Image 1 (cartoon, rainbow, N blue to C red):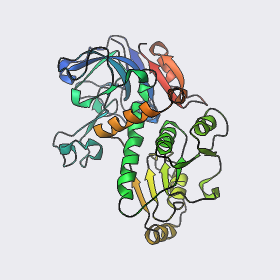
Image 2 (image 1 turned 180 degrees about the vertical axis):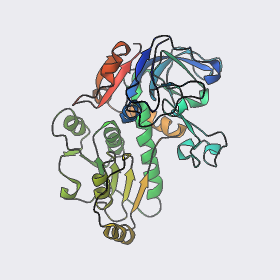
Image 3 (image 1 turned 45 degrees about the vertical axis):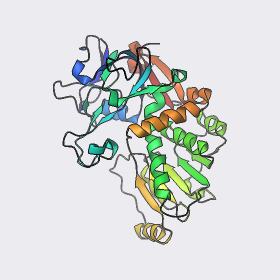
Image 4 (image 1 turned 90 degrees about the vertical axis):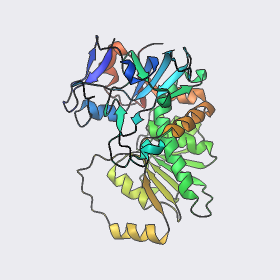
Length: 348
């Protein structure tokens, strides 16, 4: 069996293992044939040796956390052979903490969770994988071409779920959304905003390539200016870049009673001269909320599946800018200038 693996903590250790062991039944009752895995910034950071953790019984980690597969067998009857399926990335910690105990593993408090392809669990970039029914999300057959987008869509489904919940603290009728960043997370965040009937603005510094057309196809407005140059104050801001200067700028840009959701992860190590007092004054006097959001639980995966099902399939298909066969895996993990989402294909 083929698998794409790395030695965690060792830069440039990516390789294709041609004789990787078959998934052990203890991994889960459902046996899945891999169709595709999506590639994101987390994978690039793991390949660079910045983080990642192998399972306890090996020194190599099968990467890949954005999955799409076809069920080969499911003795539990929750799914059927031939069904499309994606695997939920995170597993609750073994203690468990208060949140993991109620299946909110995305809100784990003690950090003892595990994650497929990232932290102590084999990922989905292998010909076959297993998953317990609780962590298997079935997909409509119509999503066969784009179902690999479910994991990033689940991330933004959680972000929007928490935005909606925070908005209930007071009478609130948001109209305008700013999404900072037009990568996969940003574009999917804009998609879910448009599905809510909001006026959507997307800011990205890339003036060419496929991004402006994808934003326009949502009926949204594309900006290449800085945050401070925008002539409006959004009710909601979803920050998807993790760029420290953009993070600070959007926190100061929200309208009164606004909500800023941070989904981009900053690398750290940069010091910026910033007026923290002015930010504090704005947040307090305008009753604004800034919060972070990462990962997702099963409910968010199901919300994401519904959102993808309501979306224009051709628009979703255009998010995937490259499809690379597993034999050319090295090419897939080498970013291109116009890439949005690169997909490594195992089977068709």
